[in-house]
Amino acid sequence: MRLRIYLIALAFTLFAGNALAQEADAEFKRSGKAFMKVYTNYHSTWTNGEANKVFEIQRAYFGYQYQLSEYISGRLTLDVGDPNFGDLEMTAYLKHAFVQYKKNRFTAKIGMIGLHQFKLQEDLWGGRYLYKSYMDEYKFGPSADLGAYVAYDIHKILSVDLTIANGEGYKKLESDTALKYSVGTTIKPLEGLDLRASYDYMGKDSAQQTLAFYAGYSKGKVAVGAEYNHQLNYKRINGHDRSGVSLYGSYLFKKIRLFGRYDLLSSPTLSTDTDPWNYASDGQLVIAGVEFRPIRGLIVTPNYQAWIPADKSGVANSIYLSLEIKF
Image (cartoon, rainbow, N blue to C red; front, side):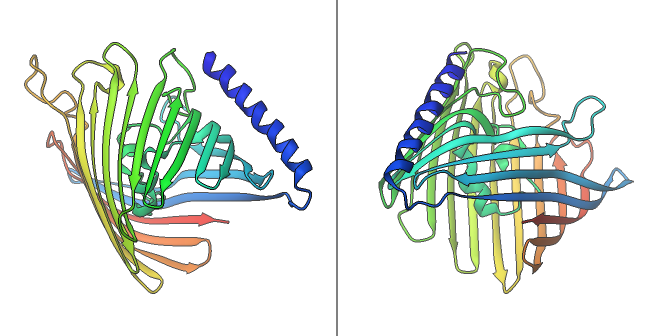
């Protein structure tokens, strides 16, 4: 409740400041833009000799972004996708609904914001339409949440950021009084090289804590990235720790991008068990494909995906034709 009051108060302050800015800067022209993005695919999956073939719409985003003043903007995004529960096949969520202030080295956002904790990773991976980035896919943290974010560029090679959020994500806004606190720093020592470390903390008893480290290099036709993530007390359950790595890279040849990715997710064995506590969900992921951009706004990607479960229940081999459509 306190967070909601804080969000409303800060939003009011930002809008009031915007009104004053408009009076002071009569030359500024307000502008807005609608956008749409759809992820869809056809795939065949073979597991233990059985085949499953299906057409699928993974997600559809619809939104509008608006520049209220030289320094203040807003954004609203609806996320339509499979809720993964009940009989519903597609449902809509409010993914983004925030006000942003950005001037010189300082940036602030408040409302339903996209979280910065794995933005660099997702940008370099560049394949969100066919598979989520590591932290998003394995639920190390939500991609958006209700809260506030501030960032400051201390130097052209160093920036720091702080986020305070509900911690439940955009699909479940507030189920308890525990807030999630995240701090991160990004270093850019060389052109094209990004190094990032972040830490977040949520709860008191058996607090969930996440450490994330990332290194990425992108210059010219080549892009490579690596990350290591370690989480203590997943879902605030004592001893339910998880960790893993993700490696990915790509090479651009004219309008064709060759890419590959490898993930590893593992968990420890508790003293009362014989197998890791998350054994059924641990495993390895392999992705390789070729990305084509025949026209602006369309990406067509034949790709191979394999999930190798730690419990040896059967490798899932899949052939995909993935598409991203946007304007």
